[in-house]
Amino acid sequence: MAAKNEAHASSAMQAAVRAFALVPASSQSDGTLWLARVCRTASHELGHCFGMDHCVYYACSMQGSAGLSEDARQPPYLCPVDLAKVLCATGADTSDWYRALLKFCERFEDQDRTFAAFSAWLRHRLSTVSEESSSS
Image (tube, rainbow, N blue to C red):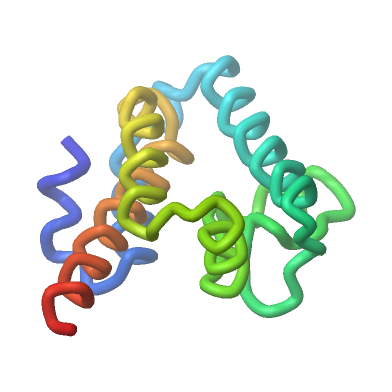
């Protein structure tokens, strides 16, 4: 469902916003909302395990938050600075990283707006990364 609506998005953020809007709020259960929050918190804390501090550069899952409302406004993805740190530490490459995240998120994208938006964002980023790789 989401993939065909992302085809005309000019940016990963636009694709994410469109996908978010396509999933009715009524389809989101407490369980998938809880899972999305746990995944975002666990990702943030794992960043600390890799020695990363709170991000001060971009909107990023490594930003600090002082409460639930601030936490809910933070994106589920890493900024370019923190993504480079994780990729260096793990030896992964950007495409592999995004594909692994997408594989997980696709399991819940029809049930949860956060997973739908992140899946759309990841698909768009994967197409951008592929284009960048083929042009260099």
